[in-house]
Length: 298
Image 1 (cartoon, rainbow, N blue to C red):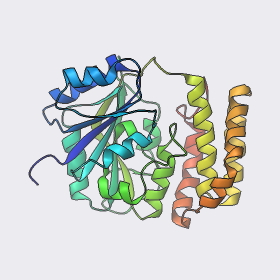
Image 2: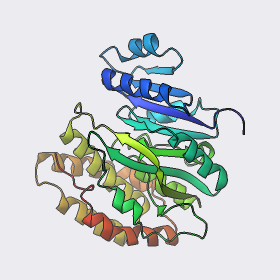
Image 3: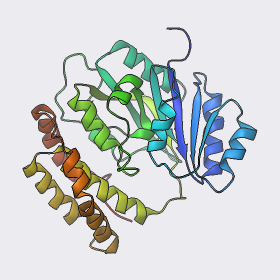
Image 4: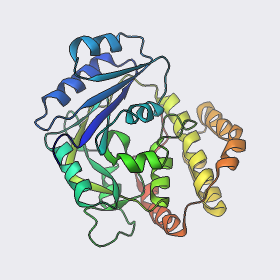
């Protein structure tokens, strides 16, 4: 097809310098794509800097911190068939956008392509990479890469129609492991997700983050996702494992209390995944236990 096939969406908050480096990188790519930035209520002059230095970027200056829901707002403006989610500290490498779009063009049953993450400065593989490369999820013949039951938003290109039909990122989840619920809803709707090693993305982890706050949100959101989509026995078993695996401190306690406080809406919206999806989730449990990428620390 002629014209761009994907639009890059970046959400950001108070990371002006990092965002500007990422935008410069995106605009210099040989396969550059349209870019939409959602500024989640930054107070460091991010919006003004984007307008001044990157006038071709479509800027949505939110008056508050929308978290991952900022991506939903951006996707409402996307006119390409695919959307590439990029964080302000992740940068697709030359050819990655084209390769991801080619995979989605060739495989209409695939909703998302997640790339191989190399962590700067030494470009070692992100610890979650083996989990995706060696995914035990059963895959149909012809799937272009290992089948996944999850995505990583900063590394993934999605089919816009599938994203919209699944409802995008849940507003109550907000941020922190927000991809888990979306991925389960995509799988429940019959979509496939896969990992493609030659879609390469570099990650320069930001130092401007609150690891304890991220842990609180991560634990809370993981528990909510379990209770929303897993059968009762699986949800209870995994809840115990998640809580036992987290540091025994006030941050973990606050996360659990926040999760319990959300039970009324969780029970109202509970919708268990189909048996085939649950089978894949159970197969993933042991690799996830071994993974160093799934430690609630900080």
